[in-house]
Image 1 (cartoon, helix red, strand yellow):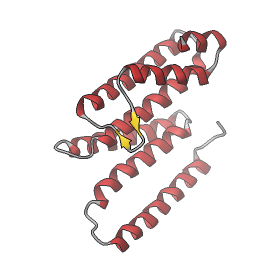
Image 2 (spheres, helix red, strand yellow; image 1 turned 120 degrees about the vertical axis):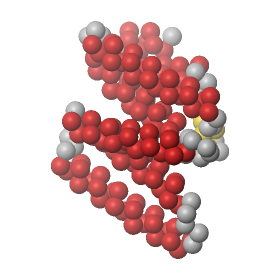
Image 3 (cartoon, rainbow, N blue to C red; image 1 turned 180 degrees about the horizontal axis):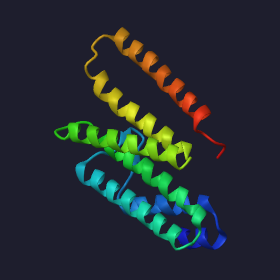
Length: 171
């Protein structure tokens, strides 16, 4: 129903409600204590993200509500990154970290190329989260933990600010 209303009344907010409802149908959920991160759910999230990006691209190429593409891509990107971050524990954590870093780099590069700064930020922030989760496991000292977060967090903020001035645009 939300999809019909979104397309009928040309409303991206209602489209995001439709995409959220569809995510629930795929079995995706977030609890108040964190992300549910079982392997089947992670795979379902990645399939969902791929499908909505594909549908959004198809609709764009057909000339149907071209301005809806960004909404599809924002939801797909966030679901993809969260699914990949949820895989950073267990037997396959190295694979998920490698894929996360590749997707982060692709998001940042394509965001700069197509002048969509939000995707640059997604790539930087989610890549930083993935690297930090792996790095912080090695730190036993609370002081080193805090120092790492302050220094690297400041570096990420400065990088985003620099890139915003250099490549960003008003969206």
